[in-house]
Length: 385
Image 1 (cartoon, rainbow, N blue to C red):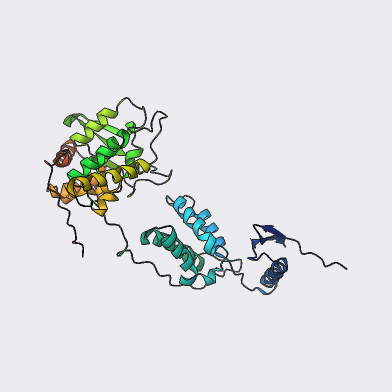
Image 2 (tube, rainbow, N blue to C red):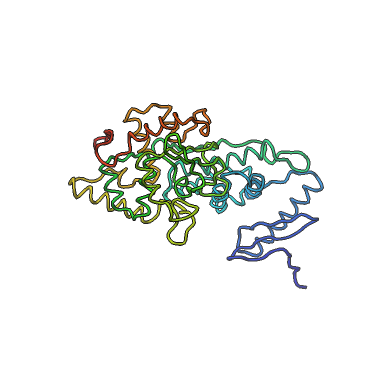
């Protein structure tokens, strides 16, 4: 007599997976084996465990994928949920089917090694992922309960994060000469955006998606400013301005000239994407990477020495740091620097008087030159040992 085949198993990519409903509950997971007999044994084990849960009240052991799924569903309106979803997709290959009780440093080590050694990301990027794992496990222990009001997890393991001090990439403010070299290599649309950014201190997305309807004329000082709303979406629809306040953008003379040069190109966005319109997605593009390589090569050809590593790998965000350092070098007060850089300082940006706006414009104009006439900015370079 032929042996009865157990139903609920299907093979995908050489591995047997379970997809079976028992008493209204679905079992949907991998068996982790390509051997049919082993897969059936695992399915029998899962069915018995489910029976014990129902009959004897044995607590169900949940896997990471269940926790990750619930976290995403419960936090779908979070501004950073898209980033969290990407992190959880990366983690799924390593701990997706690992029981919550087995997640610890050792379990996470293969994921960490992949991200560091193969993908080449920073310690900070890995820590962002680990922080989300810790957050989800805390919810498993402190908030989420099963049908019998028992927590999904009794205790949260102490998961070690990586040391960011030895790995983090330091900000690199550009000198005037470096700025000239870099900007000369950028395509025209990026050059205009970069020139604007280094004179206003905005973040990348606040430049890419700058809109004309955010411009506010200030007749009493004969100038205009931009007021980016707090609900502005950044790269994602829910990203928002970083500190959740309106972002006042003060235009110095250089930034004003850039803005005037953009008028009439697009009715909605100040820096539209080519002829198709719509906003630029980001400034950090292959064109930016190629431009910084050529600029570093020109530095080396001119000075007969290698360009500083920070210049050779200059980031779009370094333009904001450059603006901030130049303001400080020009003697602009901390309070005014905070206002110009969009840092939270307890004031309501939309309530500035005309005189106060004029004062901020004067402060911003202290760094509105485009050559060595600007404030001296010395970059301290550690001698190579």
